[in-house]
Length: 329
Image (cartoon, helix red, strand yellow):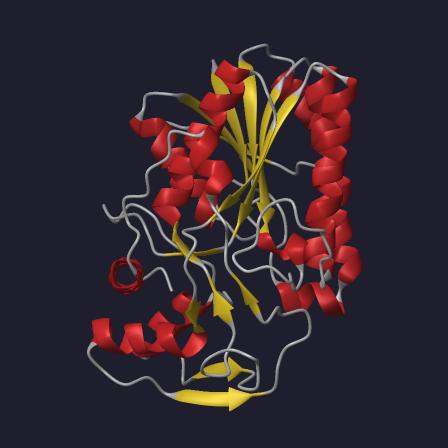
């Protein structure tokens, strides 16, 4: 059978496509290439350039009968942008996800793995945060993802349909074999930005907020290597196919690092000081969020292989150097 990967030419999506390809799974990618790159996936993977909000296109793909599962990455992901342009996020992340889910039900596709986010928690009172806390997103991005989770939950209750919602924490790093990585220009991921600054691709990196109630005053996040996250998707897909049950689980390591700790790691691995500036907090940013990871380990055969901050940074730096060599940026 075939796995349809939406947004499969993007950062996380391309890592999953390679992970499935490595396992000899048949993959079809749908991507509008607004932020992704066709060169980021294997050349023998079918790529359909299109929009997941296009119901007719979805019916043509899912109606072929060979697709038994969808992994859904396509959407907008920048928290501050969601605050200034919320309707874009409710359209791209919620309305279009509704079209995808509806097409899956119409065409008898029973399994869907969803790229959710720790942003559904907002500012949780319990750290590490379990999946059972009240969900209170503080940004339209988080709200748009939560709405999709709700649609998936209700669809699974009404139809022969199962889903896994993986709530990502902060994704970083790149494929250890150098095949793909975070390539989007103007990306806002901290480690990506810091690596660009380390290599002279940015004039400086700005720290947003130094007055949080954390040990050094900067925000604390749980950073997960993108290759480990891709493997979590592979295992979630296997769970849906075999257990035939739905799952909601955090995807993180259960350990947090502050912004300043991350920047020190980039300086340590890169071997040079970073040009750092300091600014006020950004709207929609949580103070500290770290995953409780009992659920993912209880239900999936998932064993992180790259659970080390310096390793994550090293792979991210190596990918930035690859982009420079290939003249991709």
